[in-house]
Image (cartoon, rainbow, N blue to C red; front, side, top):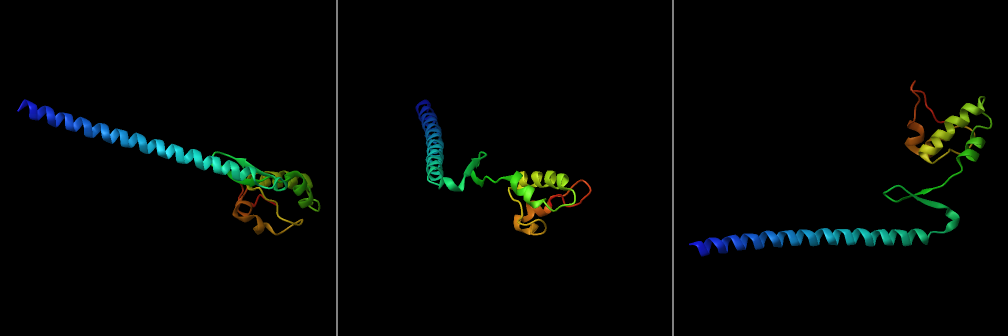
Length: 128
């Protein structure tokens, strides 16, 4: 009777240890897969044409294009009745949305909902 009880206990301990070992191996494989995908991403980034001036930002490693907000907003606000106010608002929108519409007015939909949906506290569209 005692031998049977000891045998059952040993079998339970072995089974629990096997589950722990399998779990540890699974975590190890997941970590290795993540590291290898990071290496591929870094190799892809280094192969990108440098003229495109792409930058890696944030932990999720999305590629975002670097743009000259100051120059684009200066051109956008050149004909505005209040150019300083326009430049300030345009700069904020450019930094957040990474886009400035072409021309001196209109074409806001080119930059998507980020640009068209941004409003002031008074619910007035913010981006020129």
